[in-house]
Every structure is written in C-alpha cells, then in structure tokens.
Length: 233
Length: 293
Image (cartoon, rainbow over all chains, first blue to last red; front, top):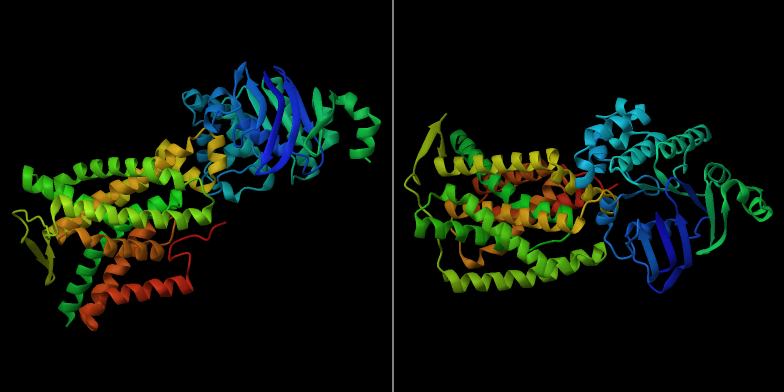
C-alpha cells in the first residue's frame, strides 16, 4: 500500500535520513521504533509531504507521491496524527472533528464518520462543544486521532500516540489502535514505547541515526537480544 | 457644553466605525498571513476611486457601489498576492514581516502614481442627493450618510465574523492561523487560504474606500494616513479579534474627537499616536487580543 524506496532527507545541509526503505501492506500495523532523534518523525513528515525527500521515491497505492503537496496526500487517503496531536486548541471539539473531514472525499460522509468517532471515543461526544484547549492530555490525543479518522483514511500514521500519557491510558490507546486496525484501517505507528508497539505491530522497523538497522515481525523483533538490551533493559 | 460633548461623542463613534472597518482588512491579512501590508491605505483609496467612477460615470448610488468596489479590490488583492506577496510568504516569520513591509511600501508608491495618472491629483468626492440630510434626536445631529456608513461597517463586521465562525472555509482559515502544519495535514491547501485571506482583506479595504469617499474625499496621497490609522486600530484592538478591531476603531474615533473638543483639533492625530504608544508599552497584545500561546 505504502512503499518507501531508499529515500534521503536533508535539513538544509544536514542529512537526517539515509537510504530508508520500508513497506506497509494492506491491513497491517507496522511500527517504526527507535530512540529519540533517530528520524522517525522526519520520515512521517516526508510521507505527508511536509518536507521533500532529496532522493528516493515514495508511492502510495501505486502512485508516486514524493513531491505531492500535503493537502493532496490527505485527499488520497493518507492521514497523519502529528506528534503531540497538534489539535486546534482555540476551536471546539466538534469544529476540530469537522476540519478533519475537510477534504471533499470525506466531507460528504461526515455525519457518519462523526458517529463512528463518537462510538470509538465516547468521551469526545460528551465534550463536543468544549474548547479543545480545555481537554486533558489523553482527551487531546483521542481528539487528534478522531480528527484524523474523520478524513476516512486508508492508511493512518500515528506519531507517538502514547507520548505524555499515564500508563493506564497508554494501554487503552494501544487497545484502541488495535481495534481501529481490526476494522480494516492500515496503520503506520511511530513509537518510543518499544515494548508496547512491538507487541501490537505485525511488523516493525528499527531506526537509528536516520538508518534502518533492523526489521522483522513485531514479536520476533521483541525477542532479539540486541533489541532487548538496547531498548528494554 | 453638554450637547457639544454628546454631539462630539456621537461623531467620534460614527467616524470610529470607519476606522474599524479600515483596520479589519489589514488585521485579516496580517492575522492569517503575517504579511504587514502597508499599502492597505492605497487599497482603500482604490476602493474610493471605484466608487467615484461608478457614481460619476454610471450614476450609481455610492452605497450601491459597495459590491462593485469589493469585487474590484478582491481581484486586485488576488493579483497582488499571486504576483508579489506569495513570494515573501515562504520566509520565516520575522523576515516575513520585515520583507513584506518593504515590498508593500514600494507597492504603495507605485499605486499612488497609478492613481495620479488615472485620476490626477485633484480631490474627489461623491455627493448623492441626500448628502445634507440628517436627523436630530436628543439635540444630537445624526447625518444620514454617516449613519448609513456606520451601519455598513457593522454589517461587514458581523458578516466577517459569521463567515469565519460558521463556514467550512472560515474554519479552514482559523485552523491555518492556529497551526498551519496541522491545517495542511487536514487536507487544507494553506496557500489557497493565504490567497483568499489576502483578497478578502483587500475587498474589505474596497468597502472602507467607498465609505471614505462618501464621507470625506479622496486623493492619491491619502493612503499613508489611512494605513497609519488602520495600524493604530489593529494594535489597539489586538490581533485575532475581529470585534476587538472594530471596538479599537471606535476608541480611536472617540479619542480623536474628544481631543478636538477639549484641546484643539490640530492635536487629534497626535492623540491617536500617543494611544498607540501607550498600548504598545502597557498592553502589547492589544486591548482584546490574546497572548500567543
């Protein structure tokens, strides 16, 4: 579904990503894990079109999207929940969700999508008229995911959905991601929480210093000695 | 004394609504694009000439020329943005403000000279048949033209607010202001949002221009004075609040007329500038603005 072929990314003269290739197949949960600063967020930003790769190719459902602007990528069905949610704090919960369904493809189904999001996150329904800035950390993350679901994506990218959440909420969040995936949505998950995401993911890639250093089935990777010593010690 | 004072207050408010409208366009453009368009006064002037032309050549009532002036300035705004400002918008925030300031300053000189060529340096005004009509209530005189201008300004304030609050496009504009990156991840084409906001700001300048030419008169060098007023009002009202901008206009209008009443009308502009400096020192986010989070 999504295929990244040996991309390189620079911030000005500084190279952040070297020869990264990865694939996400239909229906999968793929995790991209690695330490802080490895370039995980950069990869998601490149896929979403917020920055341009200087080499390599990204294709989504057979179409080359390496140089397609971000709003068109959303229209194609590839949505991202950015790091720390980035919800519109000055707008109500409902307005945030409406904006999620901004693209023409999603706008016509927005009442059905809204009902579905409220079913997944009943808390958002309770707070629909509240200003998003008044939500708690967990609720903000729910809103960010709900907002992305409103665009009816075929592939959802999540950047650190567990960041800053209490352990009980993290568990709940991962459970929700599994549920959304079982309903047929393909997921690319970026996480620092290696244990939880490797347990959740079908396949995973290990990223270090801008390069892929390992890849495998999620639970397999979890048993690798190098992964265990590096991340789970 | 008392009638004089209340008459003065009423005039201050009526004039102030015009200042508020003049600033709304500037504030819209700056709020969304972070471009400081100091050629805003020239856009107001063009709106005024559009009204003058329609009135003197086609004999259209000045208030009915508003849609015409709006459309003309909307298009001029779109062209100016596409040709010029779309190039400065890609810069980082701080140099964006500086560069847009320089570019817009140059643009204002060009627009002034264009106006000189098209309409000469003569002062122009429009005088409809009801120009002298006024009502009196509680011994205060309300000239019809000023009252109608106040109503127009109020209507556009409400319309702009409803547009930003309730339409999908308005929400997209607000989302872009809050976080352009998140907005583009929603599928919003932020460059289209910038283009549209700039054009709407210019269209509002067009409306303000028709009111200026109907209430006062216009000439090619008028732009800077109106840019200054709009700037003062924008800072006074604070960014991000359209009603705040309008109230800022009223405050400037009343301050000016109170200054002419109590001190001397020569000092009215000075009073506005003093107000400007005081707000910058004591409440830099403006009276109704919110601090950037």
